[in-house]
Image (cartoon, rainbow, N blue to C red; front, side, top):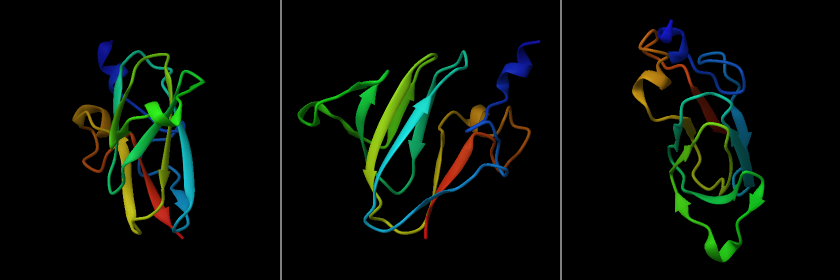
Length: 119
């Protein structure tokens, strides 16, 4: 049944059981997104901009990187992002498709969602 394909996780868990990513103010962070599913996911990061640092394991030279707050991660693809933790708070990091972030609208709090938390 196709409805079973509308359930999504981040690091194998769905919100509220996802693990926050703890950061310290001024810390340089690198995060890899890997999509092993059959749907593309526009991953969006609130409160920060990030640089696209690598795609499919291939480093992108600094002079050719894009500054973004959303990146489309296609099926079978990996994307590495880099950002400076320079905006204290608790910030959502999630797929920007409504039925993906809420697991087919089953949870109003979201499904494919984690937070970046300053410690």
